[in-house]
Length: 111
Length: 114
Image (cartoon, rainbow over all chains, first blue to last red; front, side):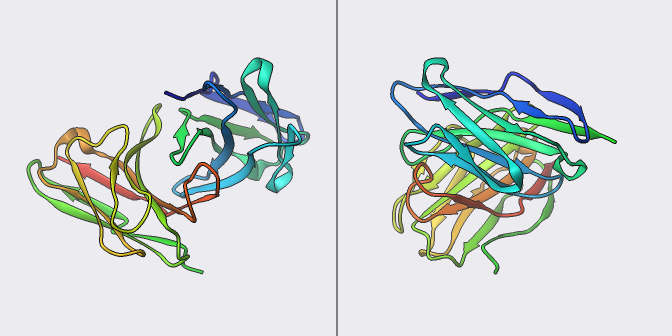
């Protein structure tokens, strides 16, 4: 069965600093990969997705992610974090019709 | 732009009581899902419905039942609530399988079982 690991439970960065959130997946073939963001008290919003093709994908709000097959990773990055990026971020994998989520990384942004 | 609507937003139940969480989507999506979110555990799939008239178990189905009433609506029922079912419940929908199209989420239902 597929699984997703987000090794960082909580990350704190200063506003304007760069950000990288880690995601590793386990699946026998190339899965579909996603990053979702959840603001406090809200549902989840899709940031970006990878299905095939270019391994560097661009998403909303200035986020990007890179798929690395050799490392089974799909890390999320942003060059300069804004205070409004404080939220919880979930990586998800879907080899078929169901999304499997990681446990999430809570991002705190200090001013 | 309603998207996915869940009701109620908050609910407190006593152990042993029953209730139904309602979910409706207005995007003409075929697939619908129920997840529960618990601290440190991410979102776990309870049940899903790939299309109208079909339902399947997810990762944590015990203690729950679902009904895909029509294409728009997918309800989750707790027949005899237990404190372990205290959680935030999210409904989601997608055009086809959530693996190859974007899944849209409702705002969640915060359920407390005392």
